[in-house]
Image (tube, rainbow, N blue to C red; front, side, top):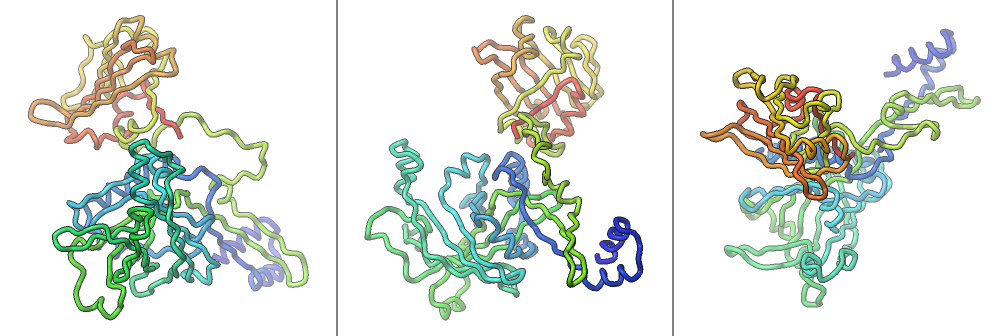
Amino acid sequence: MCHRVLSRIKNIFGYNAAVMRVLFLILTLFVTVGFPQTEKYDRKFFVQLRGVFGRFRDSDLQRVFDTAHPIQCSELASGDGEWRTVAFFNEKRELGDWYRRNFDEVKNDLAVFIFKGVCRGEHGPVQLTTKFPVTESIEAYNQNRIRLEEIPVNVNPAVRVTFDSQIQAYIFDLPYLFLVGERDGERLYSLDPPALVDRYKYATDVVDRWDCKSVTADNVTYQFLICRTTTLPRNPAERGQSRPAFGASAYFILSDGKEASSSVKLSFGDSDGPRHPVEDASGLAAGKIDNPHDSQSPPAWEVPDSDEKILDVMRDEFRIRFSPQSWTTRIGSAQVLSAKRLSSLESARPAEGADYCIWLPAAPAAAGRVLTEDTVAYVVNAHNQDAQSSSSIVVTMNSTDGVHLGTLQCIFPRALSAANIDFRRWLLTVGEHLSIEVKP
C-alpha cells in the first residue's frame, strides 16, 4: 500500500530521493469507513434485503451464521447507532419467517437496538440500549384505536456488548424477557411487554442470548447483521446441563439502513512543518460533493438494476413508459414485442420458445392516453407455468378516472416461475420500445 501511495505522491510532486525516503518513513495512512449522507432505507436497500432474505430462506442458517464475517466496532456504533429488525427466520421453519418490504413497515416497527460507545480497537466493547413496544398497544394501533405515536415503548437499561473471538461475533445477553404463555409444555417468552400493568415483570430465570455477525456478499452494500438468538437459563451453571431444543433458536437480520462507503486520507510532511492532506478520489466516487453548487436533486424516477426481479419492482411505485418514437402511430392497435422488435399482431413471428409481450389496447383514443398522461393506475397479475400455459406477467392499465387504456401481456415460455423474471430479461424482450421506471 505504501509503495502505491508513494508512487502517487511522486506523480504530484516529482521525484527527489531524499524527500521520498523521508516521506516513506513518516507517511501515515488513515482509512476511515463512513456513510454517505443519503436517506436511510431507500428503495435500493429493500432490493438488497429481498436478495439477502431469498438467499437465506432455504439455507442452513447455522452454516450461514458460521461462515459470516465479524463486524467492526466502528461499523456497529456508527452515527446514531440505531439498528432495526428487517427480517426474521425461526430455526424451526414452520414457525415462520418474514422480511420488511418497504419503509413504512420499518417505520411502524418501534423496536430498536442502539449501540453506543468509544471503540477501543476493531472489536472493542460497546453499550446496547434496547426499546420494545407494548403488545396490547400495538393491537390497539392495528385496530385504529390509537395513533402510532401513542404506542408506549419500554426502554431497557443498557447491557454490555463484547466480542467473542472464538465464534467471531459480538455477543450480549438481554435479561428483559416476559413470560407470555406455554405451548406443548414449553414456556414462551417475548421481549415485547404484553401490557402496561404491574403484574407483567421480567422473567427471572432466563435470558435472551444474541450472537451477531456481518452479512457480506458481492452485491450487498448496506449494513446487515445476522443475529442468532437463543433463550438460555439465567444461571450459567445450568446452561451446560442440556442442549436447547430444536426451534429454541431464531435468526434476526438487523440493519441501520445506511449504505457503506470508504474514503482514504493520506497525510505526509516533516515532524516540524505543516501536514498536507491528500484526498483520495474514491471519496468523490462514493458520492462526496465538495462544491455545493455542483449538487443536483435526485431524479424523480430511475431505471431498476438489471438483476432486479420484475415482480419485486412492481410491488413498489413504478410506471411503464411507451417510447413515442415507436408507439405514436401504433398505440391504437395490437402489437407484439419480441427480441427487441416491435411488430403488428398480424405480422409477428416470435421464435419458438422465445419470450414475447403483446400490447392489447382499448379504444384508440383511450389507448393514446398512455403516451400523454403521467399518472396511470396499474394492476399486476402473475401466473406460473403449469400444464396448460406458460409463466406470464399481465399489467392492466387504467386512467386515474377509471377509463381502461390497455393491457400488456408478457409471456415467458421457458420460465418455471414469473417471480424469476428479472429486468434484464424483460429488456431483451421489449428493447427500447418500453421501459419501466421506479421511484428512488
